[in-house]
Length: 137
Image 1 (cartoon, helix red, strand yellow):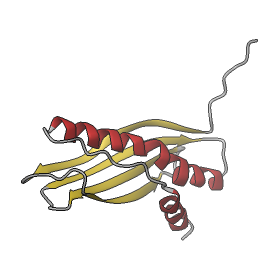
Image 2 (cartoon, rainbow, N blue to C red):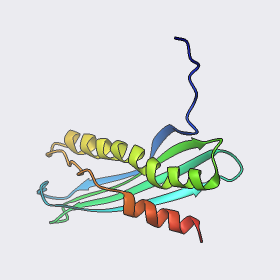
Image 3 (tube, rainbow, N blue to C red):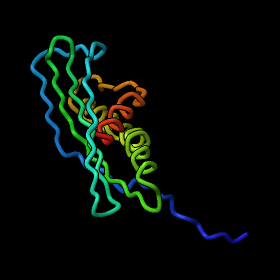
Image 4 (cartoon, one colour):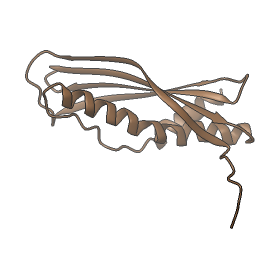
């Protein structure tokens, strides 16, 4: 059976860590973390390439650990409607990019001599809905 593979209309190209600010100023209680997560989307209307940024601000309850990190994911959307593209970027892209953020935070904190900070899995649907609404403005 010989079939030609067809590229998906929405593809994850790569990611980079755009910003990382990590500090420890005292004893860290790694099981008492607070996290603020923000999604930002930059649509490039001149081409099919788009950038999604995820920003996380993580602190322990005693504020002895501070970790601010921003990851940017680059995606390609071709042969799809604007509505399909926006849904891919607002819902699928964060779900694709979030594990890279989790792995980066765990890796850096684990190498810092403390218990690794493991960001729990979260449902990003409400964040995606807010992002989608911001595109309709």
